[in-house]
Amino acid sequence: QGRTPLMAGNWKMNLDHFEAAHLVQKLAWTLDDAKHDFDAVEVALLPPFTDLRSVQTLVDGDKLGFKYGAQDLSQYDKGAYTGEISGAMLAKLKCTYVVVGHSERRQYHAEDDAVVNAKTKAALRHDLIPIVCVGEGLEVRKEGRQVQHVLAQLDADLAEVPAEKAASIVIAYEPVWAIGTGETATPDDAQEVCAAIRKRLGELYSADVAAAVRVLYGGSVKAQNVAAIMAQEDVDGALVGGASIDPGDFASIVRYRD
Ligand code: 3PY
Image 1 (cartoon, protein in one colour):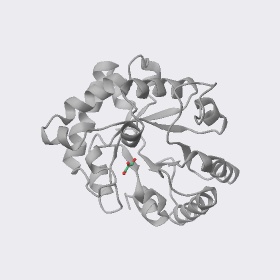
Image 2 (tube, protein in one colour):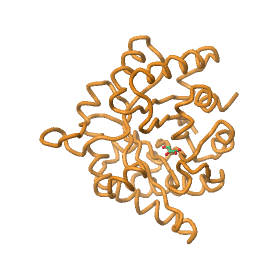
Image 3 (cartoon, helix red, strand yellow):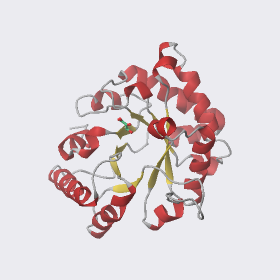
């Protein structure tokens, strides 16, 4: 298929900068022992903002194979937006990725698709790769409208994103009912929606864009279920929550082919 798998650890609001350094070191040792090839399976760390500088220092200073990024950014580039962090600030820290529209931000911070779209475009203005999260809640799933729901989010979140930028974007399908609940979508559930996302990218852009974009699955991914999910044709990686702050668990997820 030619798409490099991506394992991205969303630490959420966990670990201070000291604990972050500890996790990065442990993870680096474990993956080094396993002779992990970071070009074959890319690994991204997504810590809280306050940890980014220590993660950058370790990763870049010691030439570790990780990429890193943030869990959110402002839709604005600078100015009187107290408490916000801009794409320019993240780019200055050499972040590669930024998560946009995680369901926890949609739910607890009232982010709608218009905001997610503005943040996606803000990330691209600063050459950050947005990991755009989409996913349905339990009611929508029960009614069998998951594909329709996710595609409507995708259309709105990618509005006005030009084709030359679209190929680099990462989409994460995270069914809300499987986030932090211990519930995982079955591999078939994940494949159904990830395939529909790819098909829609083909309609919105081109077959080349659809073939290039990495579509991740997220929602209670663990060492025990990652291989079955990764075996699906249209799943190119995982956005990992809780298991990403345990070095042993996250290393096993990264090494899902072992
Ligand atoms: C989860 O797995 O809980 C996530 O939300 C990953 O982003």
